[in-house]
Image 1 (cartoon, rainbow, N blue to C red):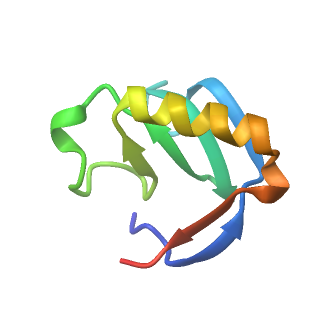
Image 2: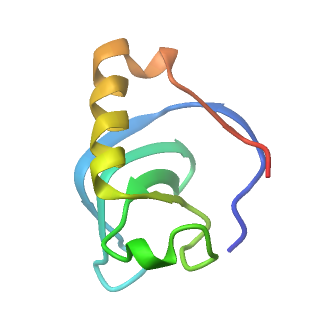
Length: 85
């Protein structure tokens, strides 16, 4: 899947999420923002920046944890996700 471009408010958080579509793949520190699309950590850090996901935005798990905790602190209504390229 292609990551959709647009601007959304974060909808929900899932710290230890697992994919229901891809063999229970780990999606740590998920911030869901548009349907099944999320920003989340990945164990496959060597594939960051390449299309290897179902359209999600993947981060190093350490960075995903930082972003996740910031989203918790400021509240989801204050977290805007903007995908431009």
